[in-house]
Every structure is written in structure tokens, then in C-alpha cells.
Length: 116
Length: 83
Image (cartoon, rainbow over all chains, first blue to last red; front, side, top):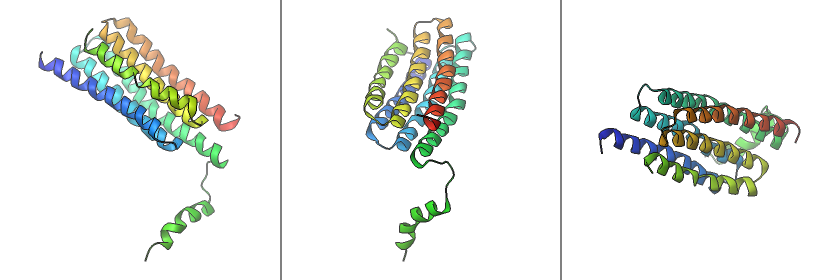
């Protein structure tokens, strides 16, 4: 087993573990915003680690280039999708996207009153 | 069975929690589960293509990455405005 094989195994384990942790976090949390947070590592760490594993095994091949392209697309589109979903969740919940001053006051109220 | 296919098998177990949340959660939780499931599916297609040494199969992962983004954005627009 060469150094390259070990590197491929480690990178694959990292990519798979990030996706599985995200899936477990999705089940563990109830709030949609928390659940969206858990999808983040899977869309960023997973593709990058797996594309790196493909590159370690086959550098400068068509498979390597396509794997890098997939990783780039997922890293670029993941945060956009996450933001759009969180925005939709807030609009469904509150009926608007903008934060009103009254909303900030009610959320900051208890923390201010607890200060000495 | 090489290391790629073993890793793919382990990765696909992650679809089960997504299925559970999509079935039992609220509609926004289900959308988050759908997004994670499409990520896992794309990664699995990528690893299967590499595990079987079939370069053209990489195109499936590429198409899946683009179309899952477009599909999820469509769901987001509908859930934000109408449904």
C-alpha cells in the first residue's frame, strides 16, 4: 500500500464523514435553520475532499478535471442555496425578509435586562 | 470491490436520515433534507465513476450537481411565495 493509497483512503474517509455527520445533525436538530447549518460541511468539505482523492489517484486526467469541476460547482452553489432556503424559511415564518426595529428590541430585551 | 466502492456504500447510509427527516419533518426541514440528499447522491455518483474506472460516468455527477441546484432553487421559490 503506497503513500498515494493511504492519502486517497484518508481523503475519502474525510469526505464521507463530513456527509454522514451532516445527516446525523439533520436528524438531531428540529429547527430548519439548525438543519441548514448541518448541510453546510457536506456541500463544502465533502466535494473538495473527494475531488482531491481523485486527483491524488489520477492527476491530470479527464476524470480529475471533471471531479474538480463538480467540486467547484458544489462549493459555489452550496452557500447560495443555503442562503436562499434560509430566506424562504424566514419569509414563511414571519411574512417578510427585512428585520423590523421592534423585532430587534424584543430579541435583545432579555439580554440587556440581565446585565448588571 | 475497491476503497471507492466501499466508501460509496458507507456514504449512501447517509440517505436514510435524510429520508426520515423528509418524511417526518416540517416542509422547510424536508427541503433541507432534500438538499443534503442531493449532495450525497452527487458525491456517490462521483465515487462510483472513479471506483469503476469509467470516466464518462463522471458526467452524471456533473449533471446531477447542476440540476440539483436548479431543482432546489425551484422548490425554494415556490415555498417562499405560494405554497
